[in-house]
Length: 294
Image 1 (cartoon, rainbow, N blue to C red):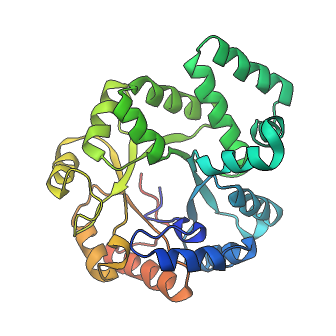
Image 2: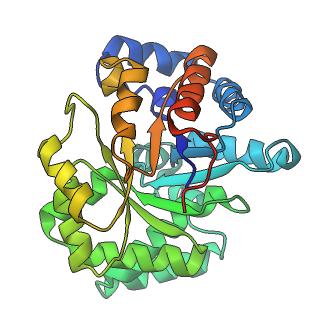
Image 3: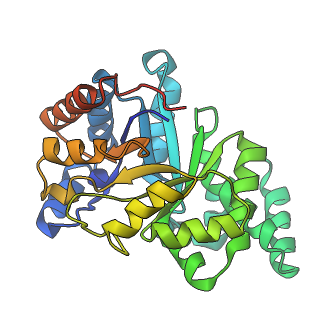
């Protein structure tokens, strides 16, 4: 992983402190070219990894990167799936069969549809999970995706259901089919680590909120610090600025006190914020923002 990862919340109207700001960002980024302009700013500052949802607009970004491969020789995607709204929107726009054609993988519509139907008919959970992953990964064909994440909306639902097997199925499939490392996003790090242990997933990549104020850190900072000290996993910190409540330098210097944190993911939409964050990370960690953490 790179030390600094670029997220996509700002592109799709997500702001955990201000609904007004979220609406303004959603309007600003209605055109995919505006998203690409910001990604170009981040790339120019040495940020090479885009940690993104599988929103339908990301498919347009993927196509842009494929068409301009020489311009983005080191561009890396970390897909985070699923993005549930796009399925509902596609069914509304294209109907059920049209939506299936939109999302099923490029191995043949009939073959994939039969695989999914058979899985549902036999209650084959592995078949359903792997088909959904393949559908989500369709937009990233031909691109670098070394880590594939399961979104927190699903991770935390599975935690609540006690369905540990699903984590093992997801991990095995992304490793075998895509040669990628599985990642997990959660709002409850300590509970997830217990579940991943039970599922037999060693040294997992886990992304969770972690910041000085304890903003949206479920279970409290102390529980997270104990996990860093006692558990074997690869942490990614998100929401480190607590949606703007902590000054960037203060936030990043605090994160730096926890050497187990391998990467920080942040979102920004302006050149100044992107540049200042990249340079702060380079200064505080004493290495380029694209330095690989092994």
